Image (cartoon, rainbow over all chains, first blue to last red; front, side, top):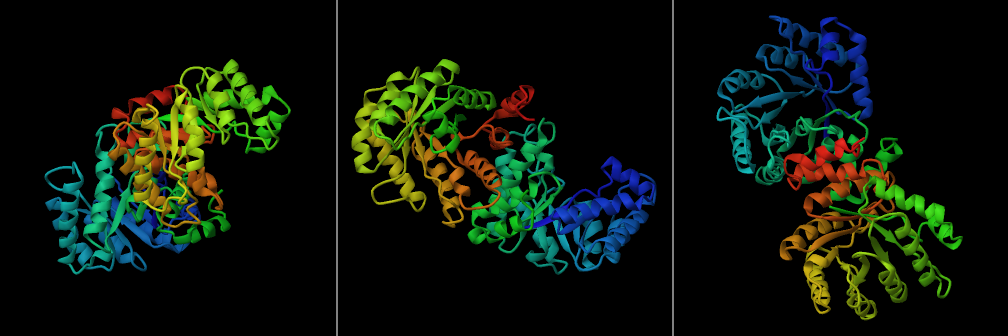
Length: 265
Length: 265
């Protein structure tokens, strides 16, 4: 399981404020806390409505986070320029978050990722709209893999995000996305599947319980990359416990080790 | 979902002591707390190594719990005499916990349940030993349903317990039991499936996380009866959240109602 810490994202008010104020201490704290809680990668998103600001934000964030943690980054932007800035500065092999099948986005981003060594999150969105069942997600996963293959990437560098939607608004989509995870893993051996799933609880009370249940269900169905807040109580334990139950963690060795390391409080 | 509160069980030291001492206050407290936390039924087990004591314990427990809560009971005993005593005194329609295919047990218990209005937990154990995969669980479920049919019970009065084993000792059994739940529900429409699942975490550290993940996975696969401690933090919310995700709770109405009732702290 690859856990990507989701918190350094300008859609969060406190993070946006810290970015605008160049408040390094706040960003460093959030970065280090996520790594301590179990994040293997750190997402960085410096989205900003001011013209040109996002490129500068990305530069600042990438350099700041890399100077203060050893975690590789997940470069998160809707701007090809900010994305390229992040990829140029990123050490090791970052993850790109994300590229969809929407024609305009695809044409802008594909040349950028082609120029850099990286893993790519392929989002099952297309110009036709959001996916509605497991079949169109599977179909779109195949098309995303083809697109990334055209710029020299094998499935092992691809993370398919099946699109998690609010279960309160779309009854049946919980089952659809879980089935899609299983089918995508089966149809494309070696591909990764995952993404941000806290969207499933949007509009509901007690969101943490829905997110925790969804993490267990998604991991059981084959999700191996999770864009989450690893500091949420019970979140990392839910991932580890589900791997123990599903047999992905044979003889529960990883679970027992995590306990010894104090990760199961 | 039917939640059976598991705590009034003489295999727990504090409960055994309370039973021996006829400490009514302790039993009443545990009973009322479980109902407040979400138990629809209360399990009562008065197991006792002293000859004849279990029948007296059962009588005391059933009368005490019924005088102090409105919850119907789950009469839990390995003694046919104690079972019959409990069934005679139980108000409403109790649950019997449990009857397996083991020949000696079956011959002793089947005449007892035949004489009383009750639901029956049918445990997938047989003289051949513990089940090892989904197929033998499905096969045993069919045989249990046949046995209960022979004493006039329809599937709607049967709860198949697929046998949850420690995942640390039997890798692969987590997946097997979950598949069995799905197959049993599909093969015998109307039958209930469930049981005590805290056994899955036996031998592991951080047991609560394994139990919480297993509850979500089992509910998703079709478990509709859970013998649990509803007071475990996050346990009832995990059940409700999973029903919201799986579509069993359409439009999440039950989840939202539970939140309004303060059940999602």
